[in-house]
Image (cartoon, rainbow, N blue to C red):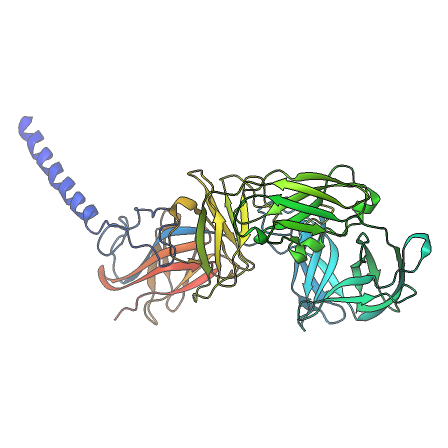
Length: 510
């Protein structure tokens, strides 16, 4: 009996040594893709098993075989889904449209809901239109834009006195970014033409008067409008903080408490266009057009400021001053955001936050501006060179989140940020998959990948093979072509950005 055991033990040791030798060769992980090396999740050590980087379990059989080994290096966050589209009436031409304020605006990763949004529609000639649109939780709303129609009207003050030099805006912005406005004459009359449609914002204001708005439908042959302006006490907001660059802060006002008739008519959404109210070098901001006898909440945004609870202010019928104490972050993360060509991505929204914290406040029927910081988070945007200094939260698990229009987003561990620029690729859309082209013309071949726990297929001659990635992201992909079990070609893709279907050419067999 003992004579039988000894040979078996010896055989087991030999097999174990052979397996250990095979598994140990070339086991070092492949390098990170270029760009933000340290900020990606740690690589998965499982795919690479030998010098040829073919996982164990892929049998070397006859004919041509191509194996695709994949390692995920980063996970991309998709941009918001399409909620609304513009349509040029009578032509069927589609116009780009995005929610500017209210439901669906910004980058908050919330489930779509029914609600109302102020939508910005881009016209072919570079002009933009604002329209109020009802959005559904499912499906895409449509916003019709018609031919130009003339709107007439009269603006008065108390006791029906004509209000001269009041301004009227119907939500149109010219190609140079200026609002297309009309001014009232000595009788308070105005005339302004605008593209026809529903949900047109009729916004009016004047010096020392409360701004107001309402949605109207403009249709041929025209429209007659009227409004009464009320006096507005000015509100001065003083930021109490010792920090350099206080002028980079922005002040926003939101409704708070019971909403009066005057406050319900206030155009909060305009702050989304103006990025709130500016702050001077002394930390002062002026809000000149609020109605009297209302309660509002003051929100301050600065890239180095962890957001605090809104500051409640009761606006009386006289000018007043509100002091808002602030505590800025002690240090900052400094980073630069670029596109795949290395060009800067200005205007990229950047958050410093903790896991589980939302990116912004939810949409509101008051059409509030998006991207107001959630309490405890810092929020800013990259400058013309794609750079930003964002407040560093002291928590070890802090996250830096980046979002840009029509781009893949990233959520990165702040502790792993390095000096390298962060690349945000454009969002392609569609299925995130690879399409593998055949290794040789006119020859049937076999394909395999370690995705999905291992997928194998026999592929007809001159046919491609497609397999889905587990998520959008950045990947390292190694292709190995074998003929009758012998390696005849290899190719490695590092830093492969996947935001749709990518095409990979199998290494060509001689």
